[in-house]
Image 1 (spheres, helix red, strand yellow):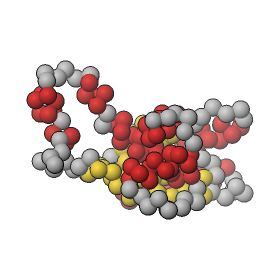
Image 2 (tube, helix red, strand yellow):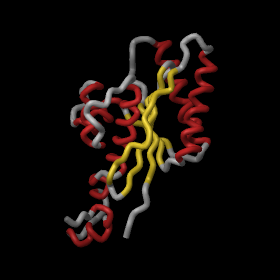
Image 3 (cartoon, helix red, strand yellow):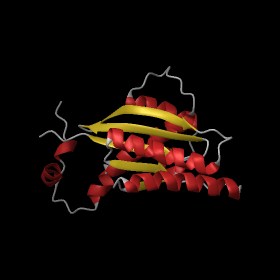
Image 4 (tube, one colour):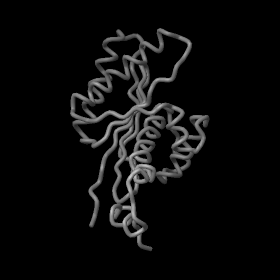
Length: 190
């Protein structure tokens, strides 16, 4: 029995650069659909930028029809004004997803890095290199803004968390036969 493919939209919110990425999961394989950055004009009114974020997220949802929406939670910085603006950008992206009927899942930057590299303190370049390996992206692929790879990391993190063996650990299983019966998509014949 073939499992249907699932699309995940990952967002790295920002007021000047919003990273976004879409991946498709088919037969437990991850494939990159799109990864880019919405570059917002710093000279535009803050509310205009929020409108553009909402518009872009809504367009992506309409075009790709993702099953899941994952977003990176803002990290706590020292500048209160920056945190407020970042929170607004995140809220607008979340509102667009919820308006489209998508469930929203939020991951801390540390959780995303740990999920991708095994190290919650990994640098952005280290995360990008690991994503290149996981998704079989050409290693010489240059990326202009790491906000896009951050969004890809959020989407992949969500896939990993959504399909975690820990989720099945909470279910009472009666041996390997029961595990196989309840998880047919995890079996790969070689």
